[in-house]
Image (tube, rainbow, N blue to C red):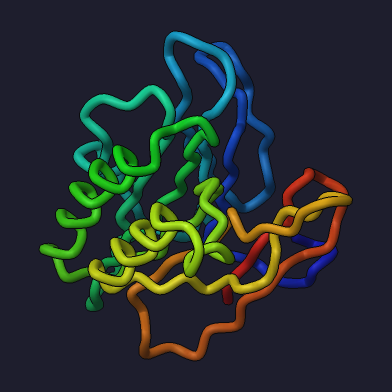
Length: 197
């Protein structure tokens, strides 16, 4: 982030592979929280939050039974303003998309009823470029739109020698703000980091 010359308020990480005994990587001026799988390896999500933010982890925003989706939500408190919610999601590629959409709708319904701004980021493993040809992808997008969430990333986030897919995204119900979105080109992962300012 020092290289970019910009201090993001929140940085989400998917597939952290952390466990109870892991030590997360510290970043100066950020608090780190993470959610990991208790009984098996892989997956996991984490959030780096600017240490000037007041926040609380929202334990009630989770799937009742999911072994293939990792979620972490926090509510950021704005003194004399409206609180907002930040979430990070990792959905494994082998997760049944219909089940994911159903479970995710239950979580999103809670957020929608609270009438708070929401920013969701993560690796959804749903290629939104296929929304016109894949019914399940269309279902996913319809679900996001029905919860007033719009995807901000519209360029491929995972590029191989044979494919280009938009499986990572940032979704928000904030339609009032001037938002700058994009990709960072780096070899830190086989996915391109995405951002929204």
